[in-house]
Image (cartoon, rainbow, N blue to C red; front, side):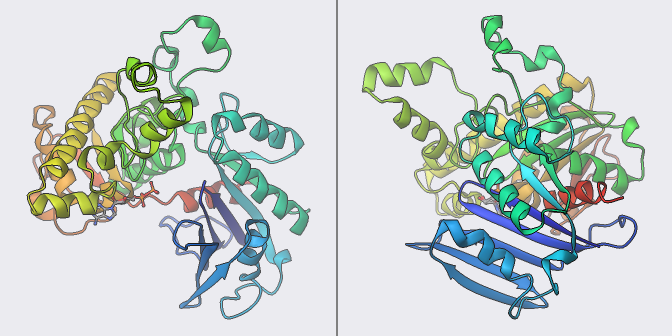
Length: 400
Ligand code: ADP
């Protein structure tokens, strides 16, 4: 059985193919084929990198209209070929960034679901159109195959009203202004993997998951159910991120417009692309570059790092308050999985929770491991987030 996963972003398209037997394995398998189309690395056009059969191929792609078809063709032709025909594919899973308040779980795609994804374009202008394009391309190629939408917002639909509704006039909540939360596929996957790694029932655990990538968010998960998250109506709220500011006084954008004559587009760009680690450091939004600059005594980079950690610790404290306790703290995504110093500094400020890091374990490139000291009251896990695998499992469930 073959399951194809499409994960479309604003400037990239990631895709992979899993070969599965009758049941889902306990540990995540390696994909048989992986493709990554990136529109940001070359001056003109996109760069497609395909990995399969121990082969890595790089293809330059000129036009966006034909890019997805070129990407999919590498499944059935050339050196990276792994399928005789597209008809060998049994299900397709799509990561859909915004499912609004309506979709609380993965769902098979029909005309109604497509309309709903289209209607949410104003809330996810750079993602939902790319998702729809992927869905329609597959529809033409494989009209008989079930396509499943896996929403990044779905896991957060259980968040109670007190955490979901903003203190604005109520009519705006009725119009859809509420906390949606994002990175839900990753937070859910990490919570389930936590139970697997610790061999404890998910229903017995209070977990805070820290998804620290270019975008950063936390989730408070009680008995497997999400009860709070730091991202909100948009992926701009909450933690300080690579280029996004996270939570700031909401009066600031208004003041910037009044005092400095910035228009809506300028403010949008400033908060989403020019702020965060990049904005404060003036160096980069990439944590590796920040750490390098800190070792060269760059004071602004040090300040950016300090703010990032201060806000992270404060937000973990808020999630623990929502949960009224903590059994497991999970680190995941680019920074969470790879930066021992971020994990060390975060845990150092949380000793009041009875949380103790084992420094040797933390420094030993842990993957899917508990790095807490023996006597720590709280487990600390590093989990390699596998959103594509989570999507594949949900798509697979529709084939049986
Ligand atoms: P995305 O949110 O785009 O999926 P990732 O989860 O891949 O991003 O995270 C990307 C970020 O991870 C990079 O910007 C970089 O800051 C960080 N990162 C990756 N490797 C390391 C590392 N070894 N040390 C510190 N940060 C790292």
